[in-house]
Image 1: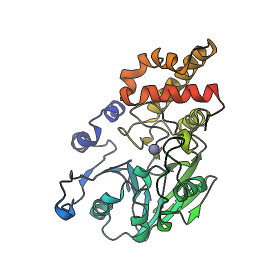
Image 2 (image 1 turned 30 degrees about the vertical axis):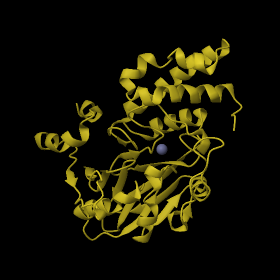
Image 3 (image 1 turned 90 degrees about the horizontal axis):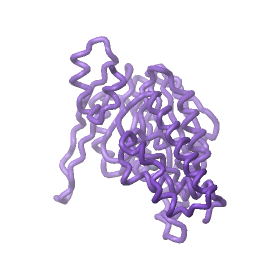
Image 4 (image 1 turned 45 degrees about the vertical axis):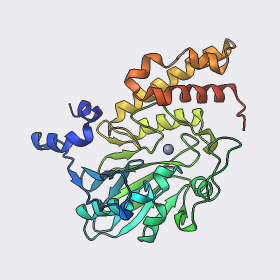
Length: 322
Ligand SMILES: [Zn+2]
């Protein structure tokens, strides 16, 4: 039952209430961070930062940008990702609600995109040591243009760059956890990391696995279909039957959802491959809607289905036009 509830799109808001009604279940607790009034009187949409507890001391943090994670305890706070810089204050306030005195120790980025790294500089200035794969660090220093031939974004400031890089499985011991940093090679980007908290039984997948929408291989940042499928299989092997799977976007879910997502991606790959071998152009393959029977279950198809098909086609046709 827990599984289906977690799949619900309203999971983040209904979980605290359900937790009260089901003693003995893993009990996530909702907490609201204090949201300071926007400065300067701008008509800004106020962002609510919420935390959801799993295990003894892990919190998923939703605000503006990709979902973050925080492991808190006497050894300090270990953060996963940084969201956008304008919500740092509210995220810190939310962390202070659950860990009033713990100092910010480490922050690891799951990948380079701005909704996951935008707050890096702020958190570094608050004392967190930044960790990332070397490819991610290099891409923050020298960003790729959003499309071939376009203008690249400005390089990130030095303070936003990792001071420690790793490219193999790495373990950070604190707060009773052996936090595993797991490189996922050339998947969503070429600098992806999944983060596993074995004691809390939580697996954070970054954007390699999103629980809504089709996979996105960001080819301008080193993402590949081959790497994506291998990474999804590695995530399936890494998660246990009761693991809480915390994606970068979309409802918090479980291992079965990653399996379904991986199998869907393989099926679409095979369909596109067949159409390509019949000599169809990319336009014809997109028009054939090879994802159609998955669209309702996967969600957000209008924004992500055609993009996924185009990325699959481009890689299968190869070589990558750059
Ligand atoms: Zn991303």
